[in-house]
Image (cartoon, rainbow, N blue to C red; front, top):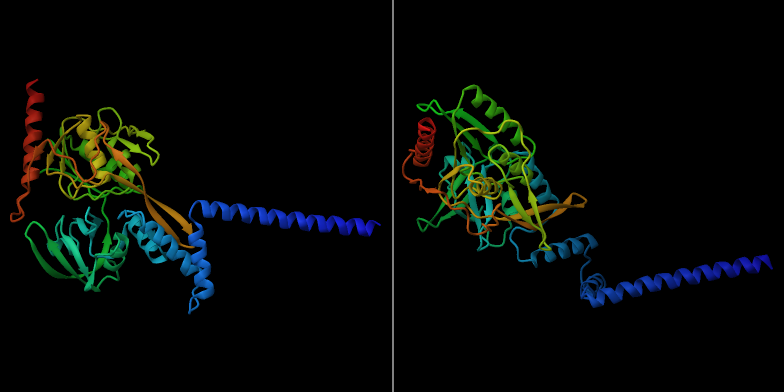
Length: 390
């Protein structure tokens, strides 16, 4: 009797498990059909059962993920396979073999040079901000993502890479051969300007969470020891970088107020404020910007302009007001998605518009003289004279 009772309980348990599985699967397929996911599931099983060749599940899943991201029609959102994920991490670490050029995607889905890094092969060969890279090694860049293009541009130091460049301002196309070098992405440099003993000069070339804040603190300490009275912050050619690093940097220069407004995907808004470093800039401030100033550097420039903490001199900035987040999918793969957009403290949307300087000065391409820097010094000297007169 006990044996029959036990057997009956086992049968009941199995039936309940089967019903549970059926219920779960039924619920899943109802949800899948309702949300149009059944096409994805059906296609997967059709390929696995009917396609003439054997295709791995991993390849199909990766293809589906890549296709979903591409369907967003957002040049800044990309699926990162193992190679692309590795390349992105190399960029974040700040050292790699390459040509020393920061690239992005413009509104026409073209690979555009944001800025060549000073002293690198790209800069030495005369590649400029705004140049379009139309071919890499005879391969059209039309359907490339920025991550894919960067992966081809990078390589072992000493190897060569061929680029076809379209320069819109001159309406001409030309080809350059570049020899890759070990690229160490710089962050901050500073000095007192010759012939102007009261003027300190800081250049922030990239926003890196690892060392930008530390290097900026060190350089400001040196300038304070040299007794600067006015400061020029050079953000020209700065393609951006880490958002948090930009917020930290802004804290050195803002008189008060927020740094940036982050608009979430649901429309909610977060306001980020800078923390005080104890090494805030004193005296007049002039900020240099140009078409190579993008993303994080625009956050800093926009906050300084809106808070009237300094005067912006130079040319209109690049105009990238979107924030991307990298998500780890496991197995050394990931996806980079546009998750937010940012507004300046006063609520200005600068995406595809850029930030207009207070004093517009275009840098002629055919002269070595830095007319933008000279104008910045002139503006700063006027402010220093006004302070003395007061």
